[in-house]
Length: 257
Image 1 (cartoon, one colour):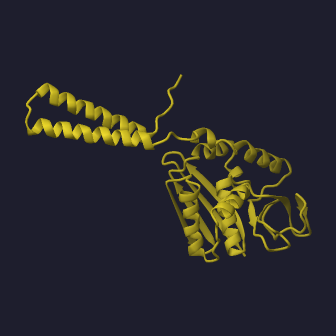
Image 2 (cartoon, rainbow, N blue to C red):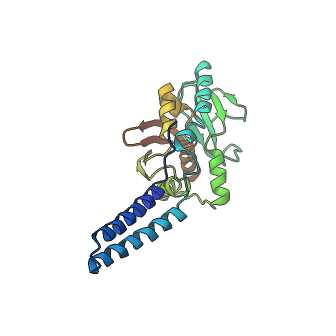
Image 3 (tube, one colour):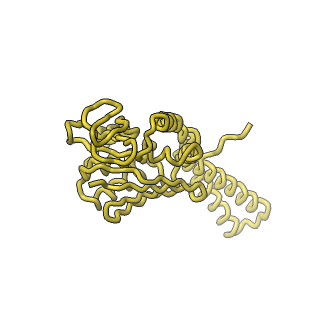
């Protein structure tokens, strides 16, 4: 059986305690009883205290990221399979709240290209100009949780929205080591470096790269919802590319007129 991986802080504490034992052993074996021996003993005490401090205050990882990244994978793939069977091939579009009587953002997957928001609240929306599947975005539970417990305020300006996405990804969700967001006209690119749920992205991409744009995962869906709510415009998923080599994910969305 594979041994469980240890917390890096706990490993550091073991290294410090080991160093303390080695320093004391050197002082005893040399037995010079001078200033050098005293320095070795003092250094060993410092290492020992620091090691105990790290071991006491550092807890183990609450969840295994490799397993946690797979929680939403099959649900994403299942909906994409349903869309394919129904002949729906468009990219997911996040419809902001406040329009057409919507109280919260909705995800609309058009049959082909987006030609306008559908009327009505049925799951399969049809109309003279548009048709597709209308669902609640997978990131909506995260959205409501953050708004309730983190007192989230969504700005309307693009630069502030870029900062908000960075803060949510790194400080609130803690799903990435670093998040960058850049706007080039109506195209917004979000890159997550050191993405901790990269295993789920790779599993979805292995099924079909189209799944990420048809029914994005909760994290990318949340970012798209934040942009839709902040700008008041429809946000369409264009591309989502995971890179296992540097554990990064790049998502590209477009603000539709």
